Length: 407
View (cartoon, rainbow, N blue to C red):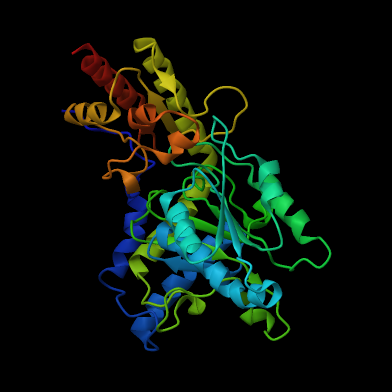
């Protein structure tokens, strides 16, 4: 049976060049990168190369790249670290008035759940609605900003429907608010989850105007178990230029690794693999986007031809910006979960939404935020294409779906 993998938004296969780059750090170069002897310094050189490679790719300073165990951890560090860093200053200025966090309704669970946990700890939470295509209203965001806003977290591109947010416009609104007289110079901070966006979109931090950005290894043909938080450093009269202060406080303490922002011995093979995946993603970005966009169009053309009643949950037509690799559909009268299982039995791997929530019985919060019913949110499927997807895979998927619907 032909096996067809169309769940690349959940995870991507490890690139062969990435695997090759990682291999020496499992066997030959095994020292602790924090040790001072030769073995440790070989590992440290690899971590430094990886940090420099990723910093160059996003236009960041070396010490602004913080390695974590996942994108989820990076998102937690961004939100919780920003709140903890800001707390003394905001308490001195505003007393018992709560600090504020602003997120969109279609954020990844690692942002939404963290924001809700902060709300339980006394932080005011604003969840911005999105329109039917999954886009944040920039003016609504501007209206929600006030002097107590510590951080705004908006994902660059959504993992379920592929909608691409106007991050530069959002950053401009925040910068305008910061420029007001008597405003705190660094707040509100802007954090962007760019996990899905990086392989297709320019993620240069100064171009976007962001203060923090999350990346993930396994979404760009790198290894699982490694993420990055870009966290801007700020000038301080008490710090030298090469020892600039981070805009967050650590959430994990111990040995002081990652410039004190994330203690724990570094996962050298994964970090090297992540950097190699970043290097390849940047080099192949345009070619990859064009190739996958053609597959996206081919898939929709064949699917709509074979099943005219199918409807899109994700932006597809017109000028709306979206990722080329994600298409989210609903077939009236069909249950998404049952279709997913039936396709898997036919050798086709797809998903019903975010892989992080796939084992729960709840419907997609993203589709509900678009205004769709609970029933439609439960009865939808996400297909996501990758570098290794072929036209033959598309043909095989459509044929399998036709067989299932005819049964």
